[in-house]
Length: 392
Image (cartoon, rainbow, N blue to C red):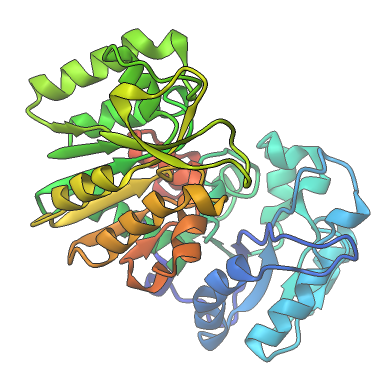
């Protein structure tokens, strides 16, 4: 796979696929610019090298139709302010008018195209739509890691029709840190896996057991493992149809000599509500009318101790319902332990990113992935279509 800093861009029309799928309020104002900021190093580099830059993204799920509130127009203001430079917006992404405007571009010009998903061909990875996008450029750069697990016209089919294709800096970072986590990690390697369901992370757990020295499981999914071990878990989240699989995963860990850690105590309550009284309880003694909503203090100590002398940590999924203050302590204290472990810490995006930010430890983590689903699929050992297209 080529990277942006390995290609000549001066005077060339560069089609840059980014992820500007940003949150907006009902008045059409961008309420979070994190994804736009993440693309700035790649954009600035292309401009410095004299590219004529055509930026494309999706926003929301308009399902192949024009939806006014899913227009990318509001992103222009944010992008212009971050770059301190004028950005032109086109209210389409393909067609004669777009081609005409692109044809008049000068070095250093930037155009932001309208939402790619206004066309059904985008999500369908349609060859004809990809050809229309490819006509616009001499060079294709993909910097949208968060959607690289989905084959779309703008990240897969397009690469068949553009001679020079490469990855931007954001995608490069994701691939490099993934390699540091899973391909050639500094050992010992520990994975912390949380979140609600075992069923969401079967492939992940099975792949990790082949790679890690220790596997820590928390969050709602831990109660399926605890019930599989014969414990009474009360009203805690449990996937009954996953009990046999949970036992098999524990057994596989034993066979592979992987230390498998589950919670030993939990913060329980009658309901997952802010007003519910939170009580610390041994996981073997959860009353029938109570549910586990966070890991307890003894578990935090156990998990933190397991991080001693670790060289690499991968973390995906919170340890409890951190959105509610009463059930956030376990996730936040573990974030503290990871941040101060001295290990290379690689965080899977989504809820884990949100929790670590809320706990105030984002700056102390080595790398936080920008793509929840894409990062998860990489950890599962899957080939991502967006990355495979660049490797072609």
